[in-house]
Amino acid sequence: MRSFQDPNLQERQNAAAAARKAMLEKFRAAAEDPAVAERHAARVAMNEARRVRMAEREAAKRAREAELAAEAARAAEHALQAQREAEEAETRLAAEKAERQRLLEAEQKAARDARYAARKAAKKERRRGY
Image 1: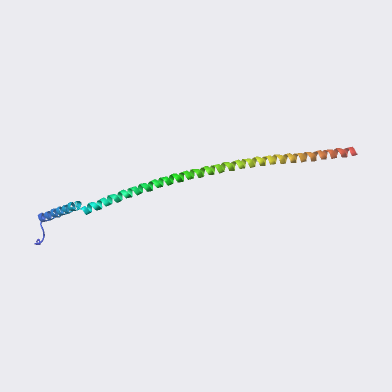
Image 2 (image 1 turned 60 degrees about the vertical axis):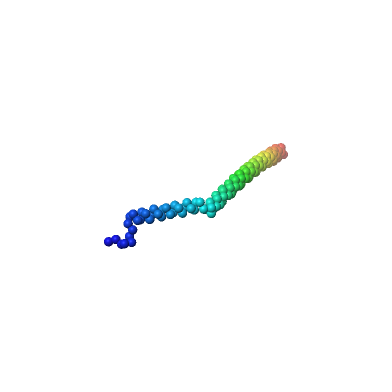
């Protein structure tokens, strides 16, 4: 058995249609309201300002990245120059060391030859002395 207060299908459909119509009227009234238009304009202005700030930040970021890239290139160039200078200094030192070694070997050979000549002369002198 149904309750007396239970609405039938037609009544429920009519109530839903009336609710939809009321919501549509409320929406239309809100769309024409100057306060809503003012809030919308404020939102649009705020979004535009946000876009401008984001573009400025992006431009500043790109400028900073370009500056950092240039600085890194300068640092790499300085490091390369320092490496070249170090290699040149190392080459000069190696050449000087080789020259010193050659001179030392020449001195040692001259001293050895002198000792050999002195021994030969001493031996010759001893043979003559007998």
